[in-house]
Amino acid sequence: MSNHDEEHVSPSTLQPMVIILGLILVATVVVSLLLAKPAGEDPVPVVANVEDNIKPIATVEVAAASVAHVDKSGEEVVKAVCAMCHAAGLMNAPKIGDKTQWGPRIAQGYETLVQHAQAGIRTMPARGGNPDLSDAEIAGAVANMANQAGANFDPAKLAKK
Image 1 (cartoon, rainbow, N blue to C red):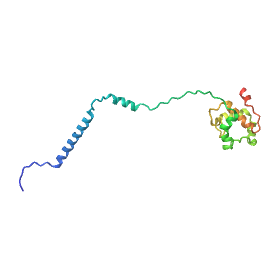
Image 2: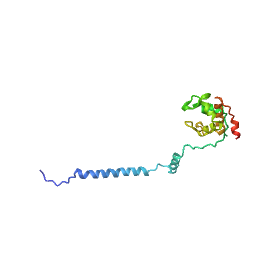
Image 3: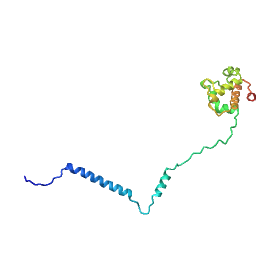
Image 4: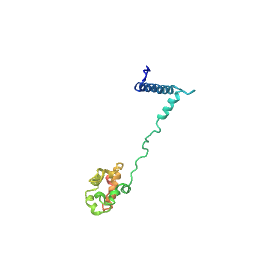
């Protein structure tokens, strides 16, 4: 074996130097790309483009109610709202035209029936589940259904009281 005084670099000392040089090279490339500005291009359009990109695509405007409520007749209300349950007797609702079911209710009086329809009773929701119905529409619908079962209610009389 020869006795040479050669400097030997071990892999354990070479590896950290390669990593550091590689990081410096990558950082230099990234910085140069960030600082490079294409000829004739101004940074202001980039800001304007950002503002265009973040602006809302639509706005919502709520329209004011412009149509006044026009009361429907009792028959119209019954067909549109009440018949859903009262036509078939759903949830123990008295069926339209059934004198046996309506008799005890008619005996309570027109005003009581209208109050029940307005406030709700048992499984029936207030105003038949339609809060947009006026008191006159409710009264008309009650008169319409009760009259089909033998009552003789006049919704105009209740409105005058």
